[in-house]
Image (spheres, rainbow, N blue to C red):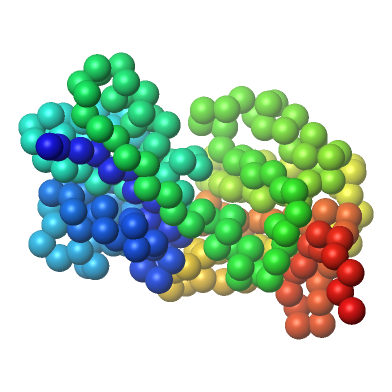
Length: 245
């Protein structure tokens, strides 16, 4: 029977792709996804048939996956990171539900960018944290700012996705200023670009100085809470409250 796997392929490198995700792709006849993500995995699955498309074509990809499944194929619809975190899982489930096709859809989780970036930096998300995307393609900017303000006021560690693009050069600056209203300028900040990929880079800085570093759409920014600190080896740690002797 045909089936759709919605697969989280992890942040980039094959070593960060789960065995379950690899198995789902190997069992599929077709792999559908955003062109950048397809190119990341293509060489690791020789012989597979890949179908890719560009940005803002998410609904179209889900409909294509459903169409191919109806034709009898087993399809892997891939997302970077985790398919259920800013990924394709919700869209695919909505499309499948409205079609009343009866095609089974299995969600395959993956390592999300926040987890990958945190591991590179040390242990900055050991306590309560919030993940906020600065992309306003689907969410109004005033609502994004409200969420950042509430997270900062509540002393959450804040992981920022999609911090800057060509059309959103100043959003990260505004977000930083909102957080500064509730947090000391010496608060540790980690900046990770291309987590898990060949051009991976890592910077450890402070809330006051974070804008001095390169930040783009391939960057995850993690802002610590009031208890977060940088250890002697340059790792960011957010303690949970255990007494460490």
